[in-house]
Amino acid sequence: MVKKRTCIFISGYGSNLKYLINNSRNQNFPIKISLVVCNNKNAKGILHAKKNSIPCLIINTNKRNFENKILNELKRYKISLICLAGYMKIISKKFINTYGKTIINIHPSLLPKFKGLNTFKRILKNKEKKTGCTVHFVNEKLDAGTNIIQKSFFINKNDNEKILKNKTQNLEYKAFSEAIIKIFRYN
Ligand code: GAR
Image (tube, rainbow, N blue to C red; front, side, top):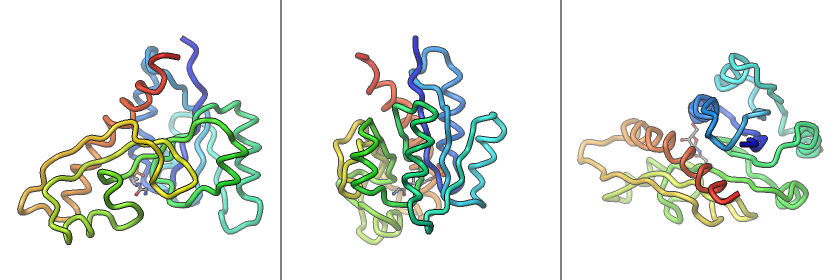
């Protein structure tokens, strides 16, 4: 199997990145992580890239043309899939169109519910019965592309933001890899 050369975008802890790196070691998993892009020079996630000898582009998103810099690297590393794994910066329409290949994102809610930030706080405030995570294709609108996979669980009375985050992220680790397998099943 020829693995798709993939780039993971992160901003923080990188726990999803860690799971994707582990799963990509399986020869039947359809992607190889060839590049990591991070827009926070202090992000813990950078260490996962370093430990696994994966090139990591640390980018200052306050600089003009930062997206062009990323696009150049994507070309250099022949990337054909981008996975946004906790990348806390909105990707521009121009970037999406110029890149022209698949971009997917993981979001900690059952989209279309609770797009954007502070999801767990809003979920609790709204007294939701169920929550979960979504992996979806990225388009020009925030958290709005077609869903690939969702995983859900029932919220307990005593669940707080921290517990919800934990439960959601444990589902994310499975959902991200399953979504990737699903995308490439027929390729
Ligand atoms: C993940 O839970 C992901 O769903 C969320 O950031 C976290 C990153 O965790 N993404 C968003 O909220 C995007 N809107 P990680 O760095 O440990 O993988």
